Image (cartoon, rainbow, N blue to C red; front, side):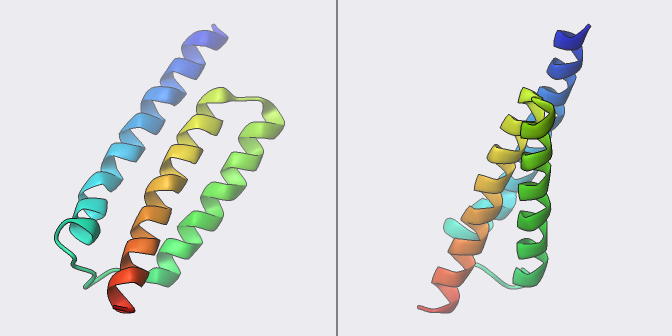
Length: 87
């Protein structure tokens, strides 16, 4: 039962990460940053860090993996926007 629950969590995390790919492409490939609110992205990053700590505390691999992957995506967007805006 626990394995099935973790699998659902992994699939949900996978879908969440895929949702960020168009935003990453927009920033890094198309070099566009219009409409991206950095304060919002920093808030999302903070929430992901807290979810990551939560996942570690309850030893949920799906929560840990999903939040690390989503955090990488968010950081890619943040660093890409900062790079474009300070060029």
